[in-house]
Image (cartoon, rainbow, N blue to C red):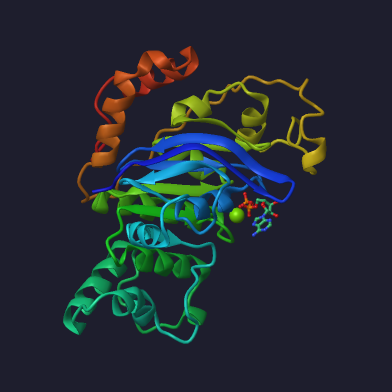
Length: 320
Ligand SMILES: Nc1ncnc2c1ncn2[C@@H]1O[C@H](COP(=O)(O)OP(=O)(O)O)[C@@H](O)[C@H]1O
Ligand SMILES: [Mg+2]
């Protein structure tokens, strides 16, 4: 079962350049969250800060009592074991077949017997839809399969939190949709806390329970998916429509110059994905639903209406 991550007042700079400032949010246990943002807004830096690979100058990242920013190396290293990481390119060893790539963390960090390694690897490969491919080399398979292999490896030490950096990069829309389904199914089976960083609107609109957006050094919102998807903030609206007109420009320096272009989002909020047939109901969705309904009055009217319209009943079951 996943655990919460609490981010409090996080600020990171490189020299004079502030990447983002005063970022606070909670990734709720077992729920799927997406962090959106144009390129260069510090999404990867944010992921690396969560696992203590990059140290922000201010703020805290609390993972079960450990502060990943100010904790000792030993504490941070231990807490990092709770995370599974899926990198943009899969980060596989080119000379190892998929089985050995996925088994690598087990052989490196544990004393698991070969029989148990085999069982665990094949189980993870089945979850991500790679049955029968264990003898293939990374160079012999498609980009989408490499990503799924990277995900299987991220799962091998039973992480409570999974972080994915642009899982859609280099994939066509169909492969992206398939990978989204795999990510949701992984959440269903493991009940892990998930954070997916992406600039893909399709993923943001259909996959997560929660969405945040980084823009111009600030976290401009983080909350239930309906909060972002009904937002009338110009940068959010432009981003969700993928439009060229709006405050987001080619260059960071000119961002904001066209703030006058304010549009109201009028598209229907798409339904959220459900687990593949045969899988149980998603525990994270149920908890998310209860949590959001309990705090409905804290949300803007537009988000509230969208939530009530869609969630009057229990969350959709896989059979619907
Ligand atoms: N190690 C580093 N040293 C200096 N600047 C960095 C470093 N890592 C990232 N940056 C800068 O931080 C900003 C955010 O980068 P990044 O997190 O990779 O953006 P994103 O993943 O959203 O595209 C960029 O301007 C990048 O150049
Ligand atoms: Mg990045």
